[in-house]
Length: 112
Image (cartoon, rainbow, N blue to C red; front, side, top):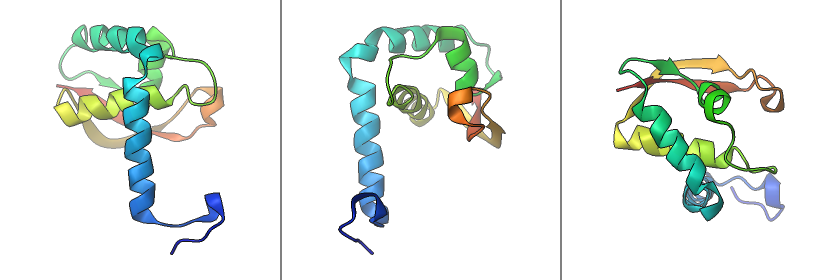
């Protein structure tokens, strides 16, 4: 069902397209290139089997950007690492400890 009320529209396929587009834009943004390099270095230094969340990554290397969309690049990078097989979802969730995330659930990952 799609309604012409912006955020009240419901369309699973359009929502998935918007998600993928947003992740691609965040992942390719020039302003986060240095952060992605730092994240790749961080991951390469982790032992196989290490359990972590996005909070752990951010605590160690910081956020890639400022502003309301600053977390998008983190999610895009984590999704990319998952798709490439460098990390695997453990099936568990943990509440975020960052105040701005309001204790939202976040995935728990394992380094391969």
